[in-house]
Length: 157
Image (cartoon, rainbow, N blue to C red; front, side, top):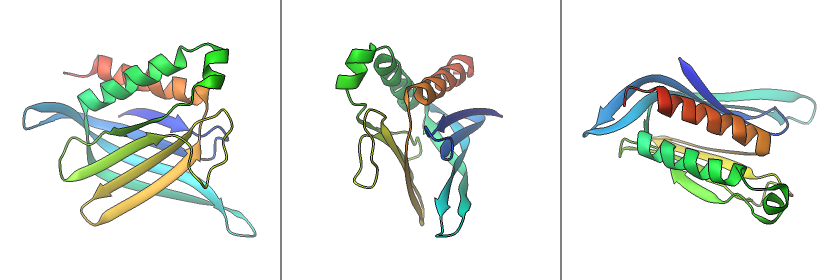
């Protein structure tokens, strides 16, 4: 199984997309993936690990390609351009109309981020709804974008 991972800048939080197989829904190409969101929280005494695994998530090839291309454009900015240009965007990645998987970039009230972008993931499938957010950085986004490109470039579509 190929994996694409977006890590937080602290290394404690991540989103993983484990590609199970290429699929098509209504003639539209995509991927059947295992979604894993993992991180930690402080319970007042200790760091506690948390994770969510969702099988059967379907992602749109064209939406992943758009995300990859837009990340590549942002990642190619110079250091001075990066300091003046926040990464902001909202991407609906789900292929199946009965699923929702949003990847959002931009500051949120509960995250304090100077130059590093905040990323939020929202998933909704049937009665399952989950939201998670963390701060990432340029290098983590570069690794994520390269992983997206490898999967898109090596798929059967």
